Length: 390
Image (cartoon, rainbow, N blue to C red; front, top):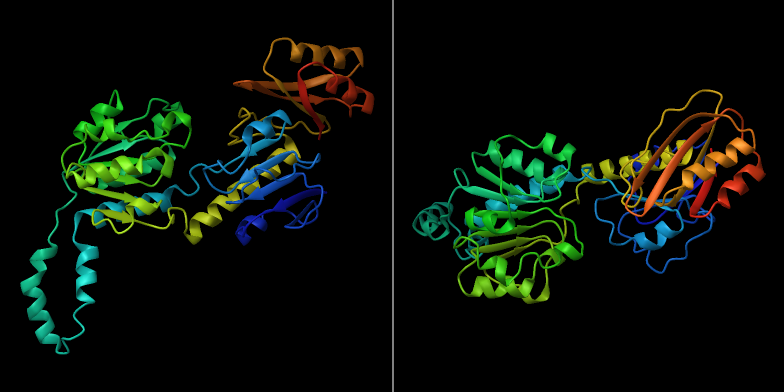
């Protein structure tokens, strides 16, 4: 029986993925094999010795102490792409709100409480509606910074709306490149994208390399009256620099999902309360994906969408036992483990080894269940972090 401790309110559809005959799931589980969470900050939370994995039902994992978990061999999962459509649709809403006089027009209409005659109100608004005239996004250029799951969907949406799309992503993966429309013009650097775009939408993760990616120097390169949209993470944008650019009349509008005190009530800022992934469908998708990934890892040792360990997956041969182990990514570790198995007369049927940065992960299917002394011998190999028998 595997035990999964939940944090936050996890969608019922995700929780229902766990078979009750083999999984115990709840918020008060002791000695859990896995954590399943949304926004709970795990920094400072005691890590049970039993913990094998943690899955965040969402894309960002800045609430998980990844480095600490890696040292313990705890695999950390996220759910990239599960909330992509929700964010994509909000980006479109943000562009339209920034382009048309929708919000000020609605606010003005709600001030007309002294007019009680419908025909009088209609005639009045015919005279006043020019105050709220805006533009159209068709034919404008959208620059997308980060062309992953969300960025590529935003690109498709913008193209369908008749926009021109340029993109920049120095870390574009092969899978992401395949997803990307051939109509997207790839830019060589951020500076070129900023200078060409009427709208700039950010879709990069929060990390040291992206902190204040949009700063005074970057904003100085934008087209006059460009619209900046940030539905990624607040740290990517220097809010003080944005305010300076807006006040100077350089940047046209800033649309974000991360309100900050110095930007509140600014006439050129449209701030939303971090609702990018807050749809019923998105929360269900994230929970289901996280649950599936946890089950596959706990039951089979397969790793999909981990942020600290490599992707590794191997089908199982009936009648075999499976050994998995994580280790520091240094030469000779796998060879030593195979020597242990040979010395103990354990026959290897199939195996797979993958590495990522400083970590490696191995799956070895053997003919007979390994004894406790075999497992102990593997665990004793230098640089082996954690061993499991499934």
